[in-house]
Amino acid sequence: MLFFSCGVPNLATVIPAIDLINKALTTSSGSSSRFSLAIRAALTIGKRTLDKYHNKTRESDIYCIAMGVFLPPQLDVCHTLLTSTHQYIVLHPCYKLEYFKRNKWDAKSIKAAHDLVQDEFNRSYWLLDIEGDDRMTHADGNISVSDHLLTPELFSYNSIYRLPHLPNQQICSTA
Amino acid sequence: MMDIAPPSSTDDKLQHYLAADVEDVKDGLIWWYERRAMFP
Image (cartoon, rainbow over all chains, first blue to last red; front, top):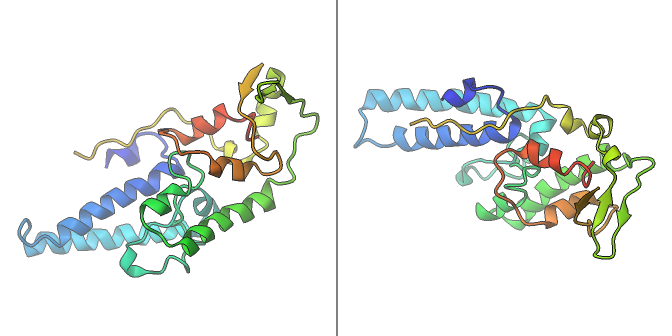
């Protein structure tokens, strides 16, 4: 839980943290051998509260792009909620579309997640080619970019980078 | 000068990004910042 109070969590870390807590609550609230009825009831209420906040994130397009659908498979509402918060970390290099494959999403759902990001890319970034881009291609196929291009002004072209710079963050252990 | 790998299609950086293997990255924002020249 310290995660939520240690600095400013970014989009790519909030939902996984919620998922982790949700998983623990789900497991524990159903474990009659480990917890009494009263404790399990409290855990269930906590899970409902967590779900409420989780669902609120679908109101943000940024979450739709940065995050991915993470619903219990039994709900089977992935298609209808692909425009919600639950799309998972397509723009996080650690996940991309692999997250869906690992969680055995069907091809249609994976394509829907891809198309959502593609549509946003086409709408917001496609035409943002940089004037005076003087990239050079070397004989080895690599491209060099002049250091003077790496300016804050260039960097700010993409609105996702308008987020404040954050120090390296790690999900704090809940143990 | 900074060397970066060329995208398969300079017209579609998103496809290039998605086609590449996932990486063990803890801070996605730093990853994007370091590749801002390739994905401006």
